[in-house]
Amino acid sequence: MEGVDVRVPLLDVTRIPHALQAELEARAVAVLRSGEYILGPEVTAFERACAATLEVPHAIGVSNGSDALLMLLMALGIGPGDEVIVPSYTFFATAGAVARLGATPVFVDSQPETLNLDPACVAEAITNRTRAIIPVHLFGLPADLGALRRVAGELPLLEDAAQAFLARYEGRPVGGIGLAGAFSFFPSKNLGGYGDGGLLTTHDHGLAERLRVLRAHGSQPKYHHAVVGGNFRLDALQAALLSVKLPHVSSEIAGRRANAALYVSLLADDPRLQLPPATPEHTFNQFVVRFADRATRDHVQRALSNAQVGTAVYYPVPLHQQECFATAGEAARCPVAEHAAETSLALPVFAALRPEELDYVVTSLRNAL
Image 1 (spheres, rainbow, N blue to C red):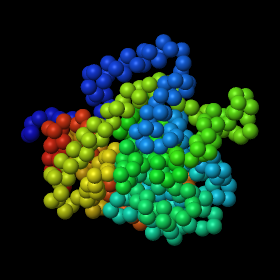
Image 2 (cartoon, rainbow, N blue to C red):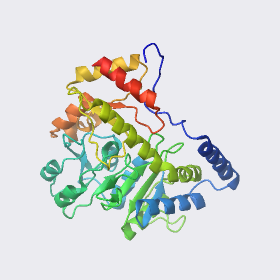
Image 3 (cartoon, one colour):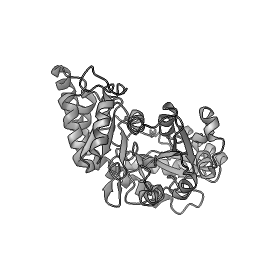
């Protein structure tokens, strides 16, 4: 491909089939003409479809994935004096939800191979103040929920499944294995909306009812408030567009898995790279490779940028080293998280990636090493 000017984005959310685009546009117009924009029948229909897809009795549409986590903690009454165990190597929202309620995030290290929450480290972090554990299914790879459940005992597992819609653990969709699951429909997700959106899932009927009350300022009935909730509602437009995309999410995941498998087949023989686990459960919201050290990672990222290949570092600073968590993170020992932050790089993997683009990424990567 010498002499060919190729630009490969990390993600292009506009690459969708024309028929799907037409359906999305028609559905958007229908919502605009309906006069119902907050909750309503579109949200109810989307919730029912998600509940069936994720094999849970309750799916509750909410404003975004961050608020979904916050609502779970609110519903459990978590607040000042309480501790919640979270991974250090993940997106900010996981720990941010804990801190917003005045509770203490307890940062725990990751497993070296998967970069998911390490059950052995979780066991060491549990105290008499621990109220919950939040495993993240990082980049679309399910955490080791079996081991975490054994370690947790009676403590609730709250699954942060923001990056893992329709990923499965031992045959079951994530989000329905712990006490509850929190999903995000941010546009970069495998099931991405056209703005913000989120979902809560649970088998617990009482918890589901509390979450529905919290979603609308804690009112039950309207204008009567026994508890303080928030404005956590999913709007009808996002629900309608997500409903159109929901039947296509399996093919999106299949495409991502195919691209990931191609990366592995082309790069597995290079000892300078550590590739993500190629397990059948992985939904590859991101395809993250690791290098020996930060200098190599940074050099490769610059070279790929010069070659017009989109990449990203997820995540450059572990949560226990963030300034806002200086007190909570002071005692944390997370060497795996720190090394991952210094050596990880996400490559394009979205389903609409063209074969020649993926080949160009691999060629550019090899040239950079």
